[in-house]
Image (cartoon, rainbow, N blue to C red):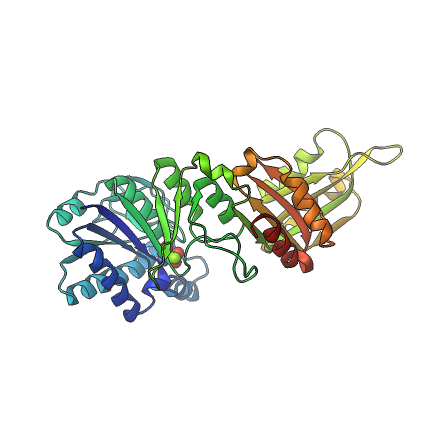
Length: 405
Ligand code: ASP
Ligand code: MG
């Protein structure tokens, strides 16, 4: 007998039909003799709907009350899931985050899990009941309801798997697993049998969102191996785990495209100490997340000047422009060029650590496609380039074909 944590996301529990399907799947594992802990999200659209209602009343509702409100979404699902199991004749008990022993800090709407005491869960498992836990929520030391930030049910599942030392953690969603690229853009994309935590984190932060990044970080920290798979079929999914030696045989695990960035260029910035610090500190103070930064070599005859280019999240472009305009008189640069027409194309793979010529091959592929590279940044397991948005998808297909096939 093994202990399994199964998490079902919003689309997997979108209506009572789907919840009954979830119960049928859980029943199979229960029948095998496994101990099953099920973590559920709110039915799809419910959390958004609750937020919308609160904001109809006032734009910035009190965060403690938001947590009380949002926690109801998962509670609806957990009870309906328990009832669906009862309908199949299977003992099941639903627990709120607090009842499950999940203790968090007091930062409402984005609380962090501090500890888990799964005593109640263990008791129920010992009685052969399926335990359903509401995802995304916990309780402070003094009994306040908290939520863990959007997408937080993933975190509940991973953290429970760690606390219970589960043999298996399955994250059920509406895709078959993690792909080598977004199949909507690259039809040749393949489902990966396995991926390392670091690769998964890079791909998620690059826009290939399958799971909340915080949960993957948590899984990495506590060594929780998990599987991402679909609740709509029985196909095996993608195993996410610590990197193993043979993972390095594959140079590029995945290709991703982030169309959600914009680029700003400051032309003719005085090239002297402290200028970059002023510009980027001002952006940081305004809570703007700067991603890639490129500085030109010095030019200009009497006073040396340089150019800075950097990217920010697209929705932040106007705010960033405002901050930059505010610095103009003081720092004394020339023009500012802003564009939203960029895409950030990245290749990710732990194999890059031990293979050479990867950047050359990527740039050569882009050159053959007639794609101009605007900016470049690299890490140990990633190479990213900024290209013109109109050519980004064809660039992605070409790079995928060159490295993955
Ligand atoms: N229901 C929450 C949300 O929509 C948590 C989750 O689904 O993971 O963000
Ligand atoms: Mg969700």
